[in-house]
Each structure stands twice: as C-alpha cells, then as structure tokens.
Image 1: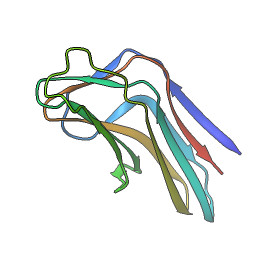
Image 2 (image 1 turned 90 degrees about the vertical axis):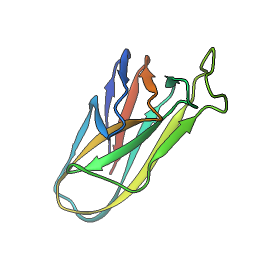
Image 3 (image 1 turned 60 degrees about the vertical axis):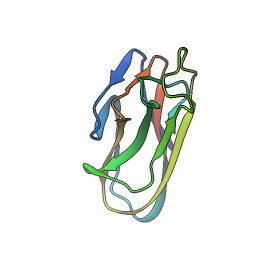
Image 4 (image 1 turned 135 degrees about the horizontal axis):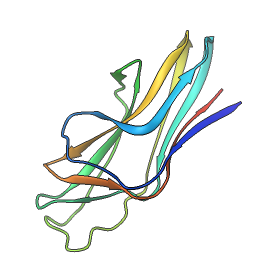
Length: 125
C-alpha cells in the first residue's frame, strides 16, 4: 500500500533549525516488525543567499529528526540566478508501532529555501 501527502508551492524558510514543511505529515498505522519506506520528494527547491546558499531536508518520526538527511548547496558564493536543486530522501524504518512522520527542512548559512511547486511525503507499506 502507498500513502502520500502533497504540499503546494510558495513556501520558504530561513530557519537554521529543523522546522516542519507545512502539509507534509503522515500517520503510519500500528504495524510491528514490518519495514516501511518513507520518501520525501522536493523536485524543484532553490535557495537565495550570499554565502554559498543551500538547504537541508529530513524526516522526523514522532518529532525526532532522523540521522539520514538530504541537502544541497550552490558552488557560487552568491548566485545571481539560483538554479533548481531536485532533492529526494528515502528512509526505511523498522516499525515497532504507530508513528507520525513529518517532513522537515532547515537553511544552510543564513540562506532562504524556497519550494514553489508540489512536494510530497510518501510511505510505502
């Protein structure tokens, strides 16, 4: 079974701390012993800033951010036209019960990350 949630565009953050991406939350059912794959797909993010801008993407389970995360940065200190940086993160979880998965993001070096197209959080049971 595949369950997915989607957020629209026009989102941004400058927060250097992990914060939820609005609309990207899934509740996994009570399953024990099964492995569930969670996929965060952000197909067209970009960042602005003047110190090699970039962003981090992660998934928190019951409000605890997981060690695997995805990130991007630009190779120019202050890009005049920031390009799109497609980012996908896959995290497999051995289930011990129900949990809530929340897509998270944070900025790198005081930049502002933008999502202006749909992004998804999916779980594959």
